[in-house]
Image (tube, rainbow, N blue to C red; front, side, top):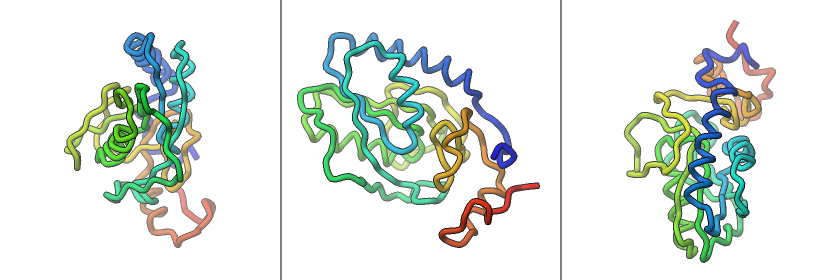
Length: 196
């Protein structure tokens, strides 16, 4: 798996140190408030677990399952909610956790949905924010790291549902991306060639 990486952007120790800082800010901002943290699945599950263990507040946790990449390396422009019911945030403050702010479409769609459910406030927290022009005018209230406009995997982020379990955040080798995009639907990982 590691041979598929072109380079590592953020090592695990760097990520965890930054989460300490973000958690301290969130703790200060929400102390004494009724807070529900909503993680956007599947990409933010590692981020959520590590961040929330650092926030000593009696908060609620929920998740929403949405998709916008649909197997590619760029947002498809279509955000799909994959669940029947949404989190109950009425009368509570909502903090959305997402892995990456790219086009902005996912974050905007989730924030709009939750805002329409009676939340007292809706703020956003992302592990990564790409330095690029966005499809929609949205920014995150809490940001872990700014990165260039390149496709990254690891620490919850995937390429075709693989590489989420990497402890770091890295750039995939372009040959791996090309091979994955060109592979027939349903091809197993063994059938997708790695760079030599």
